[in-house]
Amino acid sequence: MEFLEILKQSLADAEFRLPRLHSPKPLYNSKDIRWQKFPGQIYGLDLKVALESTFPKELLAQLTPSLIQPKSLPQGMNFENEYVIRYYHPAISKELDKGREILFMPRFTKEGELFRRLVFRRKMIPDFPNEGRMQMMLARFGEDKPFGFSCWEEGDKGNAAYVSLAFPGKSGDFVPVYARIEEYPTPVFLKIEAEETTEGVLVCSRAISPEEVPPHLL
Image 1: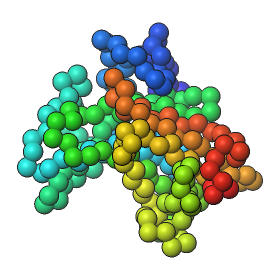
Image 2 (image 1 turned 135 degrees about the vertical axis):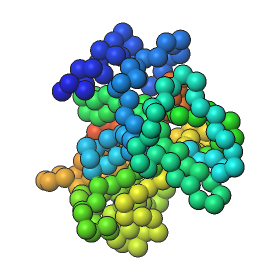
Image 3 (image 1 turned 120 degrees about the vertical axis):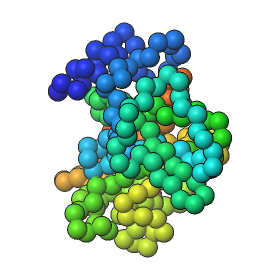
Image 4 (image 1 turned 180 degrees about the vertical axis):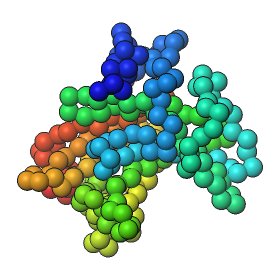
């Protein structure tokens, strides 16, 4: 695939792994950046992720000096109400043997930022906004039950299409989240991790065995 070949070339001689070492030069080519609200594919088009930053509406956010901004942004990368404005950030991704790495590059510095979230989106069936193309749910160790997406159909207070998780969270480290996706004939299980690096926010997903997931996801 042409995109992957360009990505591999732009990342030559650079480790694109957790953890990430500081480098004085960008490890990506600006033309490889996906300027979309949901640029990160966790499981093809059926499960995608965005990095969202929330600022007070009256604050003028400071642009990240090292990131070349386009002249115009695709629709949906900014959202505002009377109190706050939310920005969504571009990313570059790389396929792995059993997963994917997505590097988000924040458009703005953290000065004045209220909080960040990772927003996961499930692909829905056109004309049926509450029906996903695939059944799926999320879970974490230390919690009592799964949440999100298909759990909405069983009375979960969340949303059938979106799940927002604080980044990095109260502990300062993002707690890994596990996904169950109902493929035929057996479900697919993913482990999703995220951390802040010198280059941006790195999200990693990989396929794992059922023995590695929280028991309430089985």
